[in-house]
Length: 247
Image (cartoon, rainbow, N blue to C red; front, side, top):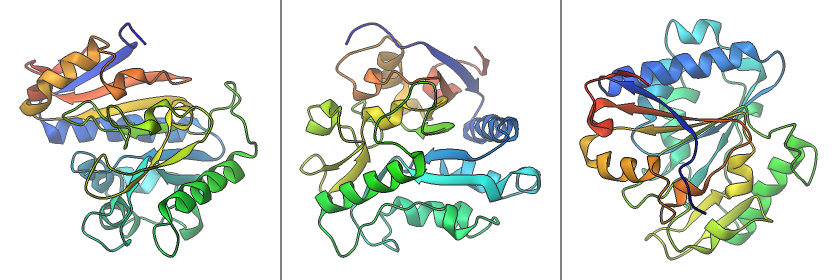
């Protein structure tokens, strides 16, 4: 795949302003949807502040918790209370602090089964929620999909050269060998089935890789995503190489 993806960039002055901008966007998208609102969450350090903001005033009071369902774009194959667990991070930052119904939290299963079985189980959960085995472009799986950008251009757990990056049939895949710990990741078909895909990128160390993403470098897994809806970038000035503002 060649050519730069169409990305609308929102450049914030610093990480706090980035999190506020992303929280504004997600809250507005949730308010605009009249029925079930589905979110695919990103792990890692960058989105944590966004989750903390959602669980705090003024966002928490107006957010439609009862009709919002939370999924995970990827997960490390560790126990839910492990320090590496994305679920643990989101639970600490958001789920434990906001009135999120337990039935609306869709964690990746990571105990009592193999990584491959975990991927199949999560895929079945997604299909059950979606109500079909095939995606309809007119009816995206997610209303919002949050993603990070790794130093090698990976996003979710789609790494350069991994088989999961080329998977087009399954919605979820086990990723073995790319990192020390096994990962479970949504594949491109699932990540792309969204009304809005948002990359969250901060820090000067991400400036070079972000520039390559915006140029559409085909060597980067993140550059391969072509969602049903819009693609946004929330970046701080350090990552974007800009003094701040919106573009």
